[in-house]
Structure formats: C-alpha cells, structure tokens
Amino acid sequence: MKIRFLSAALCMSTLLQPTFADAAEESLVLAPSSRWNLDYGEESCRLGRTFGEDENKVLLIFAKYAPGVSMEVMASGVPLSAKRARSFTYSFDPAEKIEEERPFFGDLESGGTIWQFSGKLIPPATFDNLQEAEASKAEFRVAESQAADATKSITFKVGGKAPVILETGGLGGVLSAMDACLDDLVSSWGYDLEIQKSIVKEPEAQGDMSKWLDYPTLPLRRGLSGSVRYRLAIDEEGRLTDCIIQSNYSDPIFGEEVCNRFMRRARYEPARNAQGEGVRSYVASTVVFISG
Image (cartoon, rainbow, N blue to C red):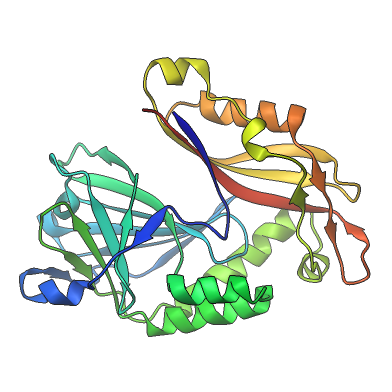
C-alpha cells in the first residue's frame, strides 16, 4: 500500500508523446450542450458543463478548493466508459498529452464511467520552469491565465478507445469567474483576503509528513483506495487549530483518520509576510491512499 501527498505543485501524471492530434480522424468531437455553471460551495468552487447529446453526453467539472493552480477534474459519461481498459490520458489542447498513473474511476448506472484526477492548465515544462525560478503566486497565476486562453479543447482517451474531444474553447473567462469565487471562499473561512495575498512564505510542514498518517485498518483489509482533500487552519505560531475535510472519495473513514492524525501529529512553521511576521493562514491539499 502507498500514501501519497499532493499539493498545488504536484499532479499524479507522467508526460507522454505524441499529442492527440495524431488520432484526430477517429476522434469523437463533442460541442457544448449547456452553459458553464459555477457552484459556490462551502469548501470549493466548481465549474460544470455538458458536451454532446443523449448517449454521447459527457459532463465535465473543474473544482478548486483554495486559490492556486491545482484543480480537480471530473469527466463522466458513456463515451468514457472503462469496460476492461484502465489506462486514462488527457490533454488541454494544444498542450501535451498526460497519462494518469492511478486515476480514480467509478461506474455509473447509465453504463458510463466517471473519472477523477488532479491536474493543472499550465503545461508541465512551464510549471517546472516556474518552480525552478521560485516564481511568485502572481507569476503562476499569469501562466495559468495564458494557458487558459490558449486552450481550445480537452481530449480524453480511455484505453484503446477513440479519443473524446470536448470543444471548450478558451477558458480564460470561466477561470476568472472561478478566481472571484475562490476569493469569496477564503473570506468565508474568516481570513482577511489582503493579508492572505501578502503572504510571501506559506506554512511549512516540520518533519516527515508520511509519518503523520497511517493507512486506515479496515479499508486496507478490504483493499480500498481513497483520495481525501483537506484544509488545515494554522495560527500565527504554527499551531493547528482545525482540520476540515473538503472532499472525500471512497470510505468515510479515510477523512476521519486524516484529521485525527493531523491534529495529533502535524507540526508546521507558520505563514509569514514580507516583514517576517507570523500570519494566521491555512494549508489546503490532498492525500491519496493506494491499496495494493
């Protein structure tokens, strides 16, 4: 079994070549069949839209749980049915194709499949260069905006099936709407938005995070995997004052155990502003439990 931490800087993916353009002739191309819908949740902002009609309908959802470039992507429908295939690749066209190593998926009563993974619009090479240069939040945001404007479509490929192309068009406008939602979200948690934007150093884990969590016994015995999105409230001294589960896929005990372990074992250096002062802030991230 494995426990894997994900942050805004990490996506469970491996870069592959070539792009989906090579298989354009045999692709299923789906035009939008609804408007974008933005859902303001207590712990997330979600953008959703359908593509295609009837048996070819696909639902696409983007979700962010805090400001940043990492987002959760969910795509579901009969055209994405898994059957015996378990490989899953995607691309924000015209960017490179990315293959998910261990995507989460589930069967729908309609006969289709829902796929869920963590990703980002910024191309991997660009993201790596920004990380190496220790770019600011604003610089990452500019890169994400540029990638959103450049996106023409999203392509999914399940196993040996023909690619499914969703004609999204540019995503700059909907991304701006999501940013406004995320600002409201942070304010609703009781944080001053301007103070959060002034942070130059995010809260930093003290010690080995992998030692803070144990694989829950019952899910491990049953061979269950899970993905838990969590938010930790951290005060000016680095103390954890709360743990909130933002989303939990699979058995509920995964979320319960994550918060129990964090509150008992986690230690953090607080966020700091430009003057080096400790600032009350939060950490929002994901931990993935993989059985087998």
